[in-house]
Each structure stands twice: as C-alpha cells, then as structure tokens.
Amino acid sequence: MIASACRLTVSLLAMFVFSNCTALRSLGPREWVDRDTGHRVVRVSDEAGSRSLYFTQHAFLRDGRLVYSSPSGIRAVDLDSRKTETLVPEKARLIEVGRKFGRVYYRRDRTLLVYDPQTRGRREIATLPPRWNVDAINCDETLAAGTITLTNGSEPARDRKPMDEAAFMKQKGRMMEDRLAKKLPMELFTLDLKTGKVVNRFNRCRDWLNHVQFSPTDPHRLLFCHEGMWHKVTRTWIIRTDGSGLKNIHQRTMPMEIAGHEFWSADGSTVWYDLQTPRSEVFWLAGYHVKTGRRTWHHLERDEWSVHYTISPDGKLFAGDGGGPENVARAKDGKWIYLFRPELAESPPAAVPSKSIRTGVLKSEKLVNLKHHDYSVIEPNAVFSPDGRWIVFCSNKNGEPNIYAVEVAKPAAR
Image (tube, rainbow, N blue to C red):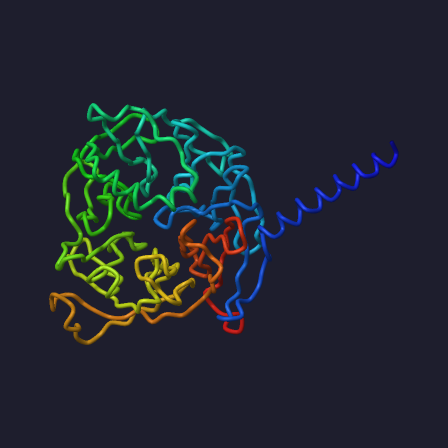
C-alpha cells in the first residue's frame, strides 16, 4: 500500500511538473532582443490564450495601459512594468475602451456592460435582441454603434453560435462566400450609452455590413464596410449617425482590384486601407482625406504587404503585421512585424489612374521575426501604443496566443 501511495504521489508530481512546463512553453520567454532585427520584444500577457483587440478597436486606458481579453477575464497591463490587473473577472467579449473617460465596454451574452476604472464600478447598459451586434463606441462615449441582421423568412431570429477562432479562420473563405450569397437584410444602429435606448436605425440594405468604426475625433461619423470577398463587393464607406452623408471611399478602376481592412488616422482626418491593383499583384497603402477628398497611395513590395496596417498617434509612421505564403500576397518572406516610414514621390508612376493622386513609397524596417507564427489560425493585429514607443501584437509563435510588444527604437538608440 505504501508503495502504491508513493507511485501515486510521484505520478501526481510528474503531472504537475508536466502541466507547468507545458504552460511555460506556451508562454515562452518574457523578454528578448530579436536577433534578426535588434529590437527589444516583451511578452506583456501572463496567461496563455490571451488576445488583443482587433486592430481598429481602441484598446488603451487613459493612463496608457493596454486592455485585453484573457481566459480568466478582461485585464489591463502596463507595457513598461508588465504589471497586470484584472478589470472584469469573468469571460466576456471585450468591445472597446472609450477615448474620453477610458471606460471599458464589453458584452456578456446579449447584455452590454461598462466598467469604469476610476470608480471600479460596473453597470449594465442594455440587453440586445438576437442578431444585434455592438462594434464601436464613439469618441465622447455617448453612443455605441453596430449592426442588425434582420430575417428574410428563411433565417431564424437567433444569435449565431460562437465559433473557435482557429476553426473560423480555416473555414473563413467558404463561410464568407456563403454569407454574402444569402443577401440578408441588415442595417446600422446607434444606442445611447447613458439610457440604453436605441437612438437611430439607418442604412437598411441587403449588403453584408461589418467593421463599424467611429471616427476618433467626430462622435457622429462612422466608417464601415460591405463585407465579403473583396473583389465581389464595393467595400469601404462612411456615413453620419443620422443616416446622412453616405459615401463610398474607393471606386474600382480595373477588374480584380481590391481594397479593404480600412481604418482611421488618429486625428480622424483620413481613412487608410489596403489597396491592390490588381489583387495579389501590385500593393499600396491608400488614404482618403475625408474633408478634401485628396488621395494618397504609398507603394509596398510583395513581402512587405501586411494583413493589417496601422498608423502612429502622430501620423508620421505606419506599421504592418506581415503575412504568410497562404495569404493574398503570397509572400515568400513576409512573416514580420514591420515599421514603415512614408516618403512621397515627385510624380506618380504610370500605374496610378489619376495625376491628382499623391504617390509615394513605404520604407520598411523589420521589427520582429514571426517565422513561427501561423497566420491561418490568428492574425497579429499590430497597433501603436498611445505614446508611440511600442507596437503591440498577438502571436501564436510559441504555441498558444499571447500578447507582445516590440519597442520601436532599438536599445542602442533609446
């Protein structure tokens, strides 16, 4: 019996050691200097399976801390000290951090809630009907905006079952084709964050509406897209919250030209987006100035193309999260976090359809080698920190997803 007890103890101890070693492997190192780039990289999450927000969603508190999702709840981390704090101790869907007050907006099932880091209080805002989805919070934290998917007699009025991200990514192409073909009626809506009441329902159509984003400076201007395979849709649009001012940002100039993954500049003046003329051949980061209509196209090489681009708070730099051979650019050496410095050209190249378009190039610098990252499972979604010192991204390069930050300046240059 004693021998059996000893064997049981040893087995339990071995299981404990194995479990903890596995967790450590999933987390990987806490800090290192990338041997290929010379840039300092830190892991800022301390729980394997943590995820940062989509690159268009504001994720920072007013004190600069990053808010993210983890298996145990919604947390905040200081990028310098890497000290973390649990804000919401339950599994929930993080939506966005408000820009004015730094409140944290999230969903639990159909209920929209807000957490205030100043008071540490939580409040229920509204319970949403089936197939209502909140995507964005405006810059003065008075309105939420999102989409409503209506029924057409064949679609039941119920929420979609959540799908594991890895499974979704593997089926994404087929699912997007199927969803686009359904032509389900949809519309946009706004919700008063104080009362929880619907303010407006507008832009009813049979296009698939997605990626709703408020301007970071105008509380009543929205950016959104017609979702689907990019060569089959007229993708990027802006509109006012009263339903006026609907405008398409980019008109196709050739067959198979694609544009998408749109995002705002930090000052709200410009909509930037990935442009390919045509698909998988010529690559640009294109910008549309909302007030003047001025267009700017910055050229990139194939290996520099990124799934998503982002812009620094001062508008002087861009960053990209790279891409693998399975992505649209079919890059041979594209698995990097990139820093881009824009340079305008004196005259547009022949490939540009109008002389009124300002053109230039993006001079790239590699920051982090992501050769072990699997883009077919999760996308890095790189974003700048509010002070511009860090670029934050999510990666599965060590197994399970974790959140990392790379310092923009090299250690010797700090």
